[in-house]
Image (tube, rainbow, N blue to C red; front, side):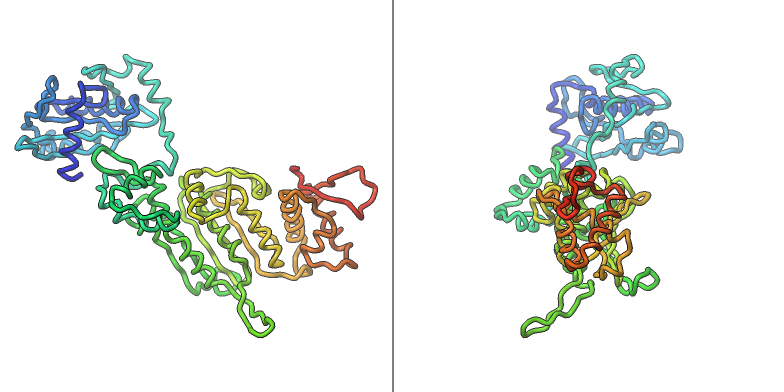
Length: 482
C-alpha cells in the first residue's frame, strides 16, 4: 500500500467509536506472544463479523484513539535470532498471510498489522484459538457459539468474486484493465473522467472498493485484463491454440498463446482461429471464392462455451486444437449436466461471467448456443459435433465434411439424436423426411433413414411420439427425455 493509502486507512480506523472484535489499538508492544494471540483473535473476529481484514495498530491510545506514535518497529524486531514476522507465521495455523506496514503520520511512527479474515476454520496461535470479546482477548473454546460461526462460515464467494489483485490504486486499475473495450463493447459513452470508469467497474463487480484502494476481481481480470500475465493466479487460464499438420499431434505447424482477457481478446482469437481453418473453393455465377469448411458461428459458440463453462478451480487452460479433419476445443472441468442434454438444458458454474459475456455480445442467449452449433453443422452437411467428458476436462469436437457412406454407425446415431433434439426445441418433431433432408438422402433411399432411426431408438436416445400408431410412414420421433 502507498503511504497515502495507509494514512487514509489509519484515519478510517481511528474514527471507529471503540475497539471491536476486528480492530485493536496499542501504544507500544508488551510481548510477541501477545501479538500472536491478537492476530488469531482479530482474524477470527473479522470472519465472524463479515470483515475482509482485522487490524492491530500500534501508536494509538486505545481509549481516546489519539494518534501518539510508537517505539515498536516490528519489521526489524526479532525473537531471539528470528525475525518477528517469520516467528509469528510459523506459530499460526492456518498460516494466514498477514502484512506488517510501518509509516510515519505527522511525525509519529505507526506500525500496523493487516490480518485477513479466516475461512473454514479458526486461526490458532501455538495450538490455541483466540477471539476478542469487547476489548479483551479470550480463548475461543470458552465461546463455542462463536467458534461454530467460524466453522459454518467457510469461503462461499464464487471464483468470479474472488480477488485477482488487491490494494490497487485507481490509476493502476485503468492501466491493468481495458476500460475502453468495456464501454465500446456495451456501446456506452466513455466517461468524462476516471471516477466515472471506476464507478461503472464497481457496479459490475469488476473491482471492489477496499477502503482507500481497489481489489480487482477474477471476473474483471479474466474479461478485461490487458495482459493476464499481470495476474499470477490467472496466467494459466490464457487460451492456447495449436495447429497440427495432419490428423495427429505428431507435427505442430504453429501455436498461439493468448494473453489478453477473454472479452478484450475474443474477436482477435476467433479471427485467428478461423484464419487457420481449411477452406473450400466454391465457384459462383462469375467468381471463385473460398468458404470455410466450418461454420463460423459454431466455432464462435464452442469457444465461448469453453471459456464460460470451464471449472476455474481445476488446473489447466482452455485449448483449441486444429487438425486436418477436425477441431477439438477443450476446457478444464467436467460439465454440471450430461452432454446429451446440452441442447435443451442450461446450468453454469460461472453465472456472472456468462451473463456479462452475453451482454458484451460474445455468446448467445442462455441455453441457445449449442442449438446454433448443431443447426450450423447440419446446414454445412457436417457430421454431428461430439461432446466428450473426460477425467478432468470437457472436449467439444467438430468434424470436417464426410459423405454419409463414410460415417460409421456411431456418427449417424449421434447426428440422428441431435437432429431430433433440435426439432423438438423448435416445437417440431423429427420424421423420416426431416432426417433425409438433414443427410441429403434421396426419397427413394428412405430405408437408409429408417435404419438410422431404428439404430438410434435401440440406443434409447429417441422414441416414438405416438407408440400406438400402426404405420411407420407418418411416424414422428422425440428425444428420450421429452
